[in-house]
Image 1 (cartoon, helix red, strand yellow):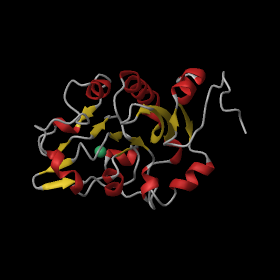
Image 2 (image 1 turned 90 degrees about the vertical axis):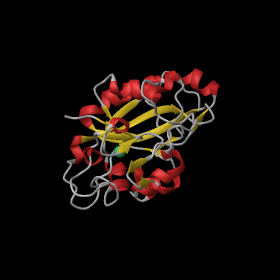
Image 3 (image 1 turned 45 degrees about the horizontal axis):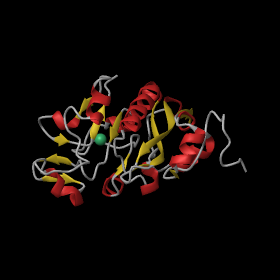
Image 4 (image 1 turned 120 degrees about the vertical axis):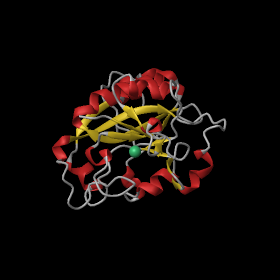
Length: 219
Ligand SMILES: [Zn+2]
């Protein structure tokens, strides 16, 4: 087993959800926690038939797995894991570095596969995620999540709202954006700025529906 405080490592692989102490963070440095890789066989076995559902038309080779850090709601550095399109992997690592440096609170970043690939369960657990091969909430065409080109941030506190429909339903109280809540994404805040300054569009500015949690990159 690798020593806990091995310095000079370029890539540290800790399970998503692992929390770093301040000592660990200062000894290891944050950069060894920000990296990406192709989907190896072990990872693919975790998602095959789950987020990478039957009939998935997104090639495995077009996806990357990101390893990153975020600040959890207690302010601690926490390990996250995310699958996204290879074309936005570097950009997303930059975005999450920026959010980490800004101390932006994100409760957890795990694969939606930890929730059986069920987007509702993932949202109810306030899980931040990207890739999931599924149609858009309104049905019909494929979501940009199916291409790994959309990210949902703190979805419980930033629900999807279309008329009377709110997802997740347990986040209905947070559809009221006049409330004070430190986890709301608001125009001009660190999260909104990190994405939109790189050309991502925000679902909170849509007209037909408000998808407060959602950022996507058009290719
Ligand atoms: Zn979304």
